[in-house]
Length: 269
Image 1 (cartoon, rainbow, N blue to C red):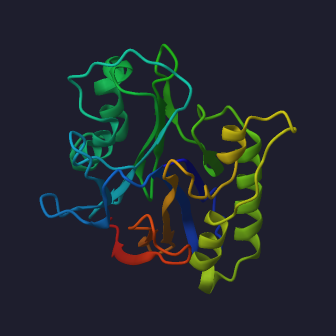
Image 2: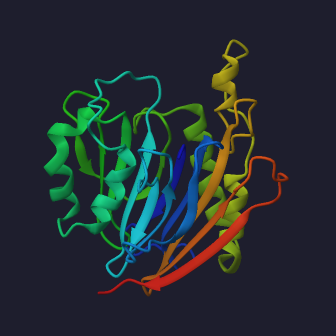
């Protein structure tokens, strides 16, 4: 997944009736098999899409769990060559592992902090839909982790905090959309944000590949890479969760053909 846009309630502020709003795109090659979001048969408390690539089965890029409303989100970090332990599972397992543990978010992150370098580079967010979230990456030597601030944030394929023109544009569009959106149709407005194709580059000397990945929505390339999945998660004042996904199943589907699914549940107190 290549971009995450998130707003969380500060003080008593609400957007409409919501206190948590997330919109995210997963960008991936289309020949990498994946299942759309659903409750997992072997772990029915988990609601997530699932990587089905051989050797990486059971991983995911974003997921939530019932009844307490845990959430995990993962993006890769580009242009870094790590030392990789090939005996380790894919980084996508970090999310279902968290969603299934009894550990607190901080305990979970600390438990594998010293082994984080063995995974390919990642930004990782774990926590609760209605409480604290924590952030960690493995791109820097000390693998820092810290509580995630409330309000508006954007995470892309850069180390979180290293702002790009893409993240600046996306965050502003996200904020403007939420402030202007019809609260009864906010999910539709967020899907429109995730379909935005404006490129965000500094000058004409930008490489073709950097320009290609500078938009929120990544069009299909000749290498079969592009935006495959949109995910929207909202939590209202009553801790009612709505999880919506649009995913493109087939490479040759028409541009406007997406499989849409929707799930709802209440977070237990």
